[in-house]
Length: 69
Image (cartoon, rainbow, N blue to C red):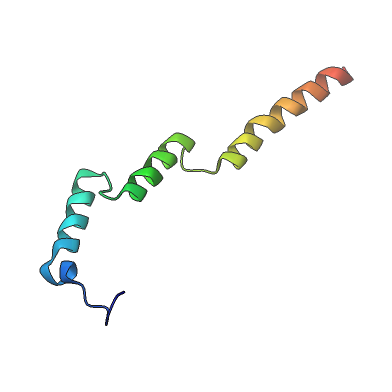
């Protein structure tokens, strides 16, 4: 339980040092941060659903147009 919001890591400057290192090397030091970064790299920064629709809709239009001709 956190009592009073005091943090030894912040007091000693460990949190600030970690964030400076992380920004300098461009890789998050936390597991969740690394997972988010990898996810953004894979999806191109967008949502997979939106990307799927961007690919699917033109294909559907092409198929429908081909059947109409």
